[in-house]
Length: 194
Image (cartoon, rainbow, N blue to C red; front, side, top):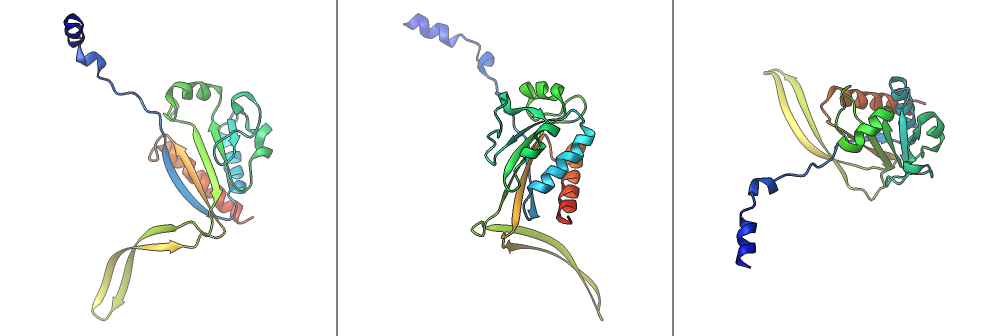
């Protein structure tokens, strides 16, 4: 027994010291008026112009695929009609090459500086406690001169008729991800105007 203990103690501790890789993306949250589905569909249509061989997995708001294809991965044009209007999810991949890349690298950016995009959306309810922090600069002119005050305050939003959209990407400050966010906002604005 003493021999076993001594052999265990002789194991190089450095060979056992490692940190497992955790594959996660960065969540960015958007709030929009009305059902999010039409804006999400417009967003994916726009992104498909950049990614003409785009693959998607369309799911419910818990991420469960809505179709029976193995893994749920299909071309966007053939699944476009499945995207739910009010709550759902869609996982976006540029092509089969990115699909294979994500098997080992999850949300990391590939050699093209692009990564998968996962969008989850659902309506907010009146029971949701939604608070936002507003930072603003107030300028006032008076007889004693001009004044600027930096203000920060919390506002309570009554969420009736609003939807929340969570976008998971590799890095919310990367140029590709910033483009994704800009396209999403433009699509939501365009869909809100009809």
